[in-house]
Every structure is written in C-alpha cells, then in structure tokens.
Amino acid sequence: MRLSSVFTIAGTFIAAGVVSLFAASFAVTMIEENSEIGVRRALDEEGLAWAEVHAGGLQVFLTGTAPSEASRFRAVSSAGSVVDAARVIDRMDVQATEGIAPPRFSIEILRNESNISLIGLIPVSTDRDEILDRLKAISGEDNVADLLQTADFPPPSGWKTALEFGMESLENLPRSKISIDARRVEITAMADSPEAKRKLETGLARAAPRGLGLVVDISAPRPVITPFSLRFVIDENGPRFDSCSANTEVARDRIIAAARDVGVTGKANCTIGLGVPSPNWASAAELAIAALDRIGEGSVTFADADISLVAAEGTDPDLFDQSVGELETALPDVFTVHAVLPKTVENDHAGPAEFVATLSPEGLVHMRGRIGDELLRETAMSFAKARFGSDVVHNSARLDDSLPKEWAVRVLAGIESLARLSNGAVTVSPDRIVIKGNTGNPDASAMISRLLSERLGDASRFSIDVTYQEQLDPVASLPTPEECEAQIKAVQTERKISFEPGSDTIDAGARKALDDIAEILKNCGPLKLEIAGHTDSQGRDVMNQQLSQARAQSVLNGLRERRVLTSTFSAVGYGETQPIADNDTEEGREANRRIEFRVVLPEPTEEVETTLESVERDMATDPETETEEEDIPDDEN
Image (cartoon, rainbow, N blue to C red; front, side, top):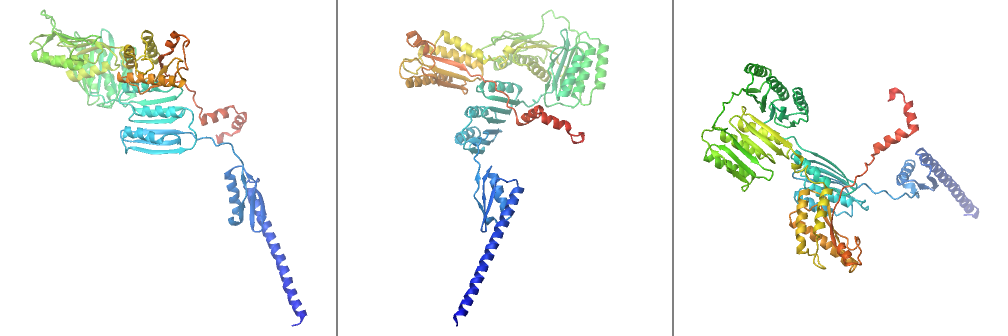
C-alpha cells in the first residue's frame, strides 16, 4: 500500500474522532445547561432560592445553607423530580439552630380496682423501675401497664417533688386519674361518700408540697337511700324537715320550694340519692306538705311509697278527714296514705310510762325510766354496750309488765338513734319518741328519721331536735396546720426534746414531750411536716450535719412508734448552719441544739396562660387584627 493511502485513511479517522469529540462535548454541555436550568426553576417554584445549582458532567451539585433540615430535604427532592435522583449530589449545609427546647415531661396515671396504667414522657434520669415497683406493690405484679416514653433531657425544677406527691396520693385513691408535671398535679377521683370526699380533699390540700399547683376534683356517687324517705314536721317550733330525700336536683328544688311556701326559713337540706320508688316523688311530697299545712300541726313521713300522716292531738276531725281525703285523691299512683288522728291521752297518776337514755359529752350513757321485762333489760344493756362501749353504760330502769307490746322495739330504736349523736337524750313514750342533742354529722337528723321510720312503721310519731355543731365534726373541727404548729411549739417551750450527749438517742426525760406532740399530731389530720434537727458549732461540720440528721430521724421514728401517720413527714438535718443563739456561750450552744417542727404549706401558684388564651389576648390587643376583623363582611362571619 502506498504511503499516501495510509495517511488518507489515518486522516479520516482522526477527523471523525475530532468531530465526535466536539459533538460529545456539545451534548454534555447541553445536558449540563438543561439540567441546571430545570433544577433551578424547580427550586425557585418551591421557594428555595437559597440553594445553589452547579452541573458537572451528568451530576448536579446542590450547595448553599439550608435554614432547616426539612428545607434541605425539600431541595434534594425537588432536584430529584427534574433529573435522576442518582445524579443529585447534596453538598448543602444546614443553618445552626438554637438548642432544642426540652419537651414537657408529664405522667398520667389511671387506676381502677384492679389495674394501673402509666402514660406519658419522663426524663431518662427518672428511676422508672422504682415507679413500677411502687405501683406493683399497690396493684399487683401483673396489673401495671407501662406506656411511658423517655427523653434524654434534664428533669425540670420541681419534677421529682411533683412525682413523689402524685405517687403518694395514688395509694389512697383506688379509683382515680392523676396527671403530673413539674409545676402541677391534677387529681380526679371518686370517693365512697361525701364524708370520705371531704377527708380526701382536706388531706390532699394539707399534704401538697409548697409551690406545687394542685387541682382536685373528687366526686362522691349518689348514695342509695333505703328506705327512700322524707319527714316534714309542723309543731310549736314551726315547720321543718327532719329528713329529706330527692332523686334529682329539680325534685329537690321543688320539694324545698313547697316547704318555703308553708313557712320554712333558713337553710333546708335535701339529699339527692338513688332508690326513689316513683318518678313522681316530688309531686307526692308537694301534696303531702300542703295537706299537713292545712291540718295545722303534725308530721308527714315517707318510707318509699308509704306515707304516714300523723296529726297533732286536738286536731279538728272534720278538717283532718277532708285534708286526708283530698291528699289520697290527688296522689300519684303507687303512693298510699296511712293517716292517724291521735286520741287525747288521759292523765296517769301513777307517773308517765317512759324510758329515757342520756349520752353525756364524755361518752357516758345512763338509762332510766321503765322497761318491759328482764329479757328486755338485758337486751337493752347488751345493745347499748355494743354501741357505746361496755364500761360507760349504766342502767337504772325499773321493770314494768304493763307496757305496750311494741315497747321493746321502741326502746331499742331509741338507743340506736342516740348512738348517732355526740351527746343528747332520747325519750320513749307509748305514743312518741323524742330525740334531742348535738352531733358532728350534718346528716344525722335524716339518718335518725330514716331509722325510726323503718323500725317503727308508718304510724310512728317521733320528734327530732338535733343540732349540728362544727366543733364535733371530725373533719371540720380539725385544727389548721398553723394551729398544730403553734401547739407543738407550746409543748417544746415547756419540755425540750433532748438527746444523750453525742448521740441520737432521745433522752428519757424528753419522752413525755414526744408523747404530747404525738397526741397533737393525731388530732391534726394529714399535713406536710418537716422535722428539722440542729446542733451547735462544736465539732466538724460534716459530723454535726450527720448527727442532726440522725436526731431528726429518731424523732420521726419515735412518732411512728406512737402510731402517728408520718407518710407526709420528712426528717432533715441542718447541722450548725442555722443557729438561733451565740455559740460562744454554753446557754447559746444549748439553745442551738434543738428539734424544730415546721408545717410545709403549699404556695399559691399563678395560673398558666394557655395557648388559646394567649392568642385571644394578642388578637384583642393587636390593632391590625381588630381592623381586619371589622372589615370582614357579615356573610363571612
């Protein structure tokens, strides 16, 4: 082959290669430009102008600083919608943000008779196992559902205190929901009775730590009233309720209004409960009260659907018959009336046939008057001892075999009624039982009325004159925490709690002071109490602190030995850090070696503004917002 032919062929190949190279370079440039333009347009449409686009070959590089991780992800996704996602190279940075705010830690504890459930978020540092162990001790090993989540953030201030208070409260609330966060504990629970509700509310309020917000919502179910009763009396003292029951708030208001119409003044109570014999209870009560008012004096007693209307002696028979007849005609179905017009009792010159039992404020019971036979006397003694105690009952009643056959029932019912009082007397006669006295139970009159109606029957006549006194109420009469603290200080002023030298053993001479303090605390009810130990400045600081702590703990243990409930008490040793006298003198050092009792009262907390309240407040004060609202057409409101 000639040389010219070789050069011709080689030149052709070289020319073709050069043309191909330029064509490929032009194609790559076009792809780069088109990719960069397309990605840039997509980013702009998404409002991601901060992102920079650079194409290199087939790859598309994204650079720039994203305001957040979410924005960075949106940029990558937008680019991937224009070119193959494998060609997108992410070289973007994320703008540094301020430290992430810690989450709101909270626990919601739900408890019923058999199970406990935990829901919420707690710090990692919180001892989760300890919480579960305490709940398992309450409800059983397999009855605790743990749905808690954790977050690695430091616990907020007050978290530990709020959690401890919530856990302690749960022990006494078998049907409850307790919501706990660092600043607030909300308790929703059910109590067995209104009295139990008052005790729980008082105990929780006193035990709440200082500075912790407490919201308590305890409901007491409506009691089952058996028999469902009402007793209305008109006598020389005027009209009044001895007992009143209603099935609804509306029925209660109607019954009280009917009593007001016939002259009842002051506060009138009517217990709302279950067990009503008819939905027409309020109508029947209104009719019976009006009938008794027309008669003049007497009593009307409901025991379920049975109505007993007893007139006073000397009532006009015609008026009595007319009033009873109108009542029987107007009453709703189910209700029946037993009407009694007593005959005038002739004077008995042999003396009244009556039995009297008195209960003194000290708890002593004296029975006198007439009693049927030896068997009844022994039965009455046994019954009274069972109600009041075997060492406080004295019987001087004499036997009388001429008494009515129902005398035994009346005597025993009278003794049982007396047991509902703090002090007073019951007088039993053939035609009437009279109960007078004082009580610390606001429902005592209603309870006695129901008891006598049930025991004695429809035609029974009885009078109840019972006065509620707050100082006799075991809940209302509790001294305030400040009063308890003052009483303890008064004891310590007379008798100091001292210890053996250099020891945490309470001195024998100080045990009487601890006895007196224990008695005060038993009468104070639940309260948050700190027992503080202090020493003088002699010795090392660490040793003094340890000694003061041990002495405070010894006092706490001493109170426990005296059967004081100490679940809300704490023992704290302050060592020599809080002197009250000069440590350079023996008298001063003696004063500084002391035990102090401090009642810890809850501090009021400010209401936390909710997000909705904040928005509403801002809208109310923002003039632009107000203008916008004014410009909205009516048909858009």
